Structure formats: structure tokens, C-alpha cells
Amino acid sequence: MDKKKCLLSKKIRHFDPVKNSRVKDVLEAFHSTSFQSRNLARCFSVFKNMLLDKSTVIYFGLSGAMVPAGMKKVVRDMIAHNMIDVLVSTGANMYHDFFESQGHNHYVAERHVGDEELREMRIDRIYDTFADDNLFIKVDAFFTALPNKLEKRAYSSREFLSEMGKRIKDPSSIIRTAYKTGTPVFCPTIHDSGIGIGLVAHCFRDNPDSGFYIDLLRDNYEIMHIARKAKSTGVFYAGGGVPKNYIQQREPMLEVFGYNNHPGHQFAIQITTDDPKWGGLSGCTFEEAKSWGKIKFTATSATVYIDATIGLPLLVSAMMQEKAILKNRAKRQFVWKGSELKQVKLG
Image (tube, rainbow, N blue to C red; front, side, top):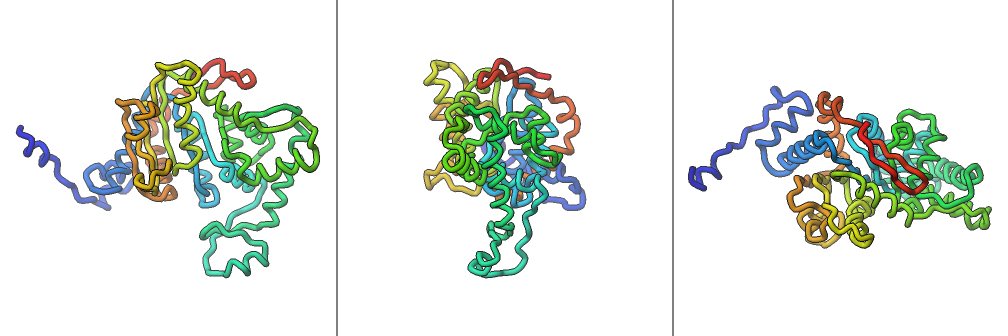
């Protein structure tokens, strides 16, 4: 077959809404459509390949206000159904997860109300979502008091979030589910959230000599050793920002520590609305990441440009229908001794 015939060999197939009634079937059909629907299908294929690989440890980077936007159970179920092995999140998402675990809610902003009026009523707005500011202040106070119940020492964010998980009873909580399943959760921006606000009040107002603090440098050390112990790694980014950069920078850290022959990520998918031409990390392509050694030259990757509140639930819902893949995937178990990762086992 000559090149022209080869290039014109695969026909666009018009999407059939009657035939493709399941989410999985919708995404599979998108392989024969165009634009971002086909990119979403490619992400689904790479996601399946990650889960099918027997040795790959999957990092999930979560940014944006995804919990207030109604994506909490999506992320929680990714952990519960063994779709991801390590979670790296913004502080805000973990804070809002804890907020809801205490019986509080976020609300649909169905009609326009002036922001000045909202402030007078102590209602906080996240685009088209409302929350009670007085309840935020109440939850902040929890984090001011929590260190009084902990050993007075340095904690990585992983250790601190595990302590939070012990104290959450809500089974729908991301933090609680991660604690119960032994899934490491890192929050390199934990100080940039209500959790951080409460902890600052503890450390600088109430108990300046307590000896308790969050050691974010220890986070770097811990996540680097997950990469070192894993035979293969993959990444799944919902948005970009700090979680994406934090996961990506483990490769330069390995080189600084002298582990020069460690490969980059073997699999990579991202859901983003950011454009690479502005030079920001959130829109950075996986091709660019290869120049840093962060993504393996032979990596299988895909990017879809879509709002994560659309793309993420579609991908996860479709994967929930791949029951055999999820059933047969071995749980990655992390054996820690303090900040030292002793082993990554397949359980």
C-alpha cells in the first residue's frame, strides 16, 4: 500500500447514540471521530494500558476545585477500585474533602447574587458553587487543635493526611478511603489551604514551641523513593499546577541523588484546558517533558483539552465498566518506616 492509500485507509465513523449507550462504548466509538472526542478516547486507551501493566505504579495529580465541583466520589472511587496508587493533590481539595466529611456541604449557585451581598451573608463563592464561610472557620479551628493530639515532631504531608484519615468516619471521604487502603496522599501545597490556615494558628499563635510542623522537604524525599522502588510508573493529571509539577520533578531529584539511569514515566495522560504556547506548566506537553527526562522517550501518552469536571468522570465511569481489568489488577502496597519507603509490594 502506498503512503496516500495508507493515510486514507481509516474512515471517520459517525457516532451512533443508539448503539453506544454505555459510557465505555461511547469512548471506544470516539476513536473514529475527531477533535477532543478522539483525544478522550486515546486517554481511555492509555489509562487501560496503565492498569493492565503488571508493574506500573500510577500517580494521580489533582488540581483545581474538584471536590467543591462535585468530583469527590469520582476520586474516592479511583482509590477504592485500585485505579491509582499515589495521590498528589492541592491543599484545597483535601480541605474540602474533610469539610464534607464533617457533615457540611457545597451548594449549587442557581441564581445571581452580588458578591458584596454574599460577603454580608458570609457565603463564599467558587464560580457557581456556594459554601458557608462560618463553617469554613469552624473547620479551620479543627486543624488548630489537631496537633495537640499528635506526637510533637515533623510530619510529611503524607503522614499528616494519614492522621487525618484515622479521624474521619465518612466512608465517602477521599482521605479516609486512602487511609483505609494504604494509598499515599501527598499535598505539597497543604499550607495554601484551610488546613494550612489552621496549622499556622497552632504553630505561631497558640503553641509556638510545640515542635510540631509539616516538613514539605520530606515529601520530596518520600515521593522520590516511590519512583526509585517502582519498576515502572505512569501519570494521570486532572489539571496541572503544583500537583503536576511535583510529580514531574521526581526525575530531577533522582538525578541529584545519583540515580542517573532511572527511566521517566512509561504512561501519561492529562486532562487540561491550558494551552502550551503560554509556557506554563499546566499546559506543558508530554513531548516537552521528555527533554527533562520526566517522560520516557517510548512512553504511551495522550492529552485531552476539556474541562476536568467533564473528562474525569467520563474516563472513570468508562473504566468502572472494565470489570475484568480492575478485578485482575494487583494492589500496590507501600511499606513505610517513618519517611523511609522500604518496599513497594504487589498484593
